[in-house]
Image (cartoon, rainbow, N blue to C red; front, top):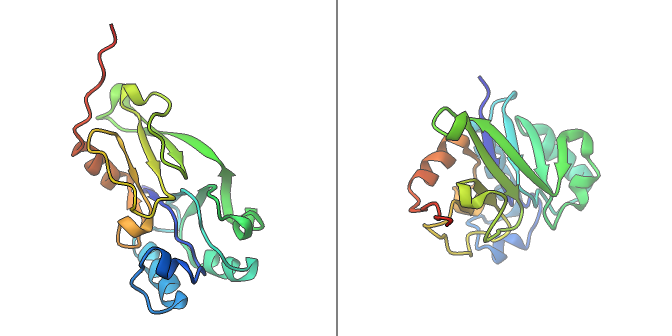
Length: 184
């Protein structure tokens, strides 16, 4: 059975991200290799990965080499740094700016869980008042988490430079104090 994974803001090849996000790596190559190893330790070849943007800031050739080493079927929600990724559409299942993903989940309402995926954080999103989840990136852990909101930053800076599974996302959402609004 394949697993569904979520991640964002890998920034492969981006030297300045080491300082901008205070990443604990001495070099870009160390960062790249750590993220690749962490990814492949979790993601199997047939798994689905939803990457919520900012894959890389490097040449198309360098990114092609990196992507060839990553396991899984990568679905890309475009961020603001996708120049190289956009030149390699064959490596992605698809590329979109926004996606609503429905996952079979026996514990969800009517057995379906809806997730709104976007590179950018939103305060409200489609069906948020019904308990739809929202995953985003872009903020590199700088945006404070709201325990009363069913959303959070899925970026690598917040999660040990590795993707999170749907089950891990679900466990985190279950800790939230969200209460469905009452509409009169």
